[in-house]
Length: 224
Image (tube, rainbow, N blue to C red; front, side):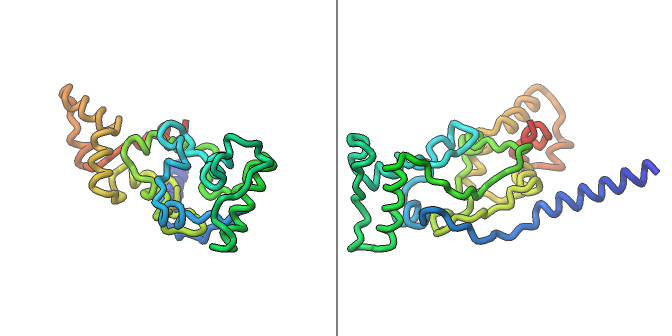
C-alpha cells in the first residue's frame, strides 16, 4: 500500500511539474492610467531601470512613484507645491488621448496619492524571487518579462511557475549568448562547482546529467 501511494505521489508531482510548463500569455488588464511601455521603453528608448530603479539591489523591482513620473511630465515639480503642478507634455493639441492620461497623472500628484496600478506579476507568498540576484547575474529584464518595449498593456509573458524556473536553473531554457556568459561568470552556484572541482571533488555524475546548469535547484533557494 505504501508503495502504491509513493508511486501515486511521484505521478502527481510529474503531472504538476509538466503543467508548470504549459502556459499561454493572456492580455494584460486595464490600468488606471494608460501607460504604454511601447512608448516609454520602445519609442523613447528609456532603460527599464530608470523607472524600476531598485531591481539590481532589492528583492522587488519596485513600482515607479508618482514623483518619478511627474519629474518628466511636470518639469520643476520638485521646486513647487504639488497643487500648483501643470502638465508640460503631451499637449492636447498634439494628442488628446495622451494628454488626458497624463492629466490623470498630474491629478494623482496634486492629491499626493499613489496610482493604484493593477499588479501583473504576483508570485505565491511561499515563493521568493529576488530580482537583484537575477539582474546582477546578467539576465535581461526581457528574459522573464518578455518584449515589454513592444507592449501597450503589459501582460505576464512567462508562466513564472516552478517548472519554468527549474528549466532555467538547469540550463534548459535558452537565453542569449551574452546572458549565458554573464551567468557562468557571476553565478554563485557555478563558482561553487568550480571550487569543488579545484578541491578534487568528482563532479562527473552531476555534469553528465545537467551539464549546463546555471543555478541551484535546492528547495531552499526559492522557498526560504
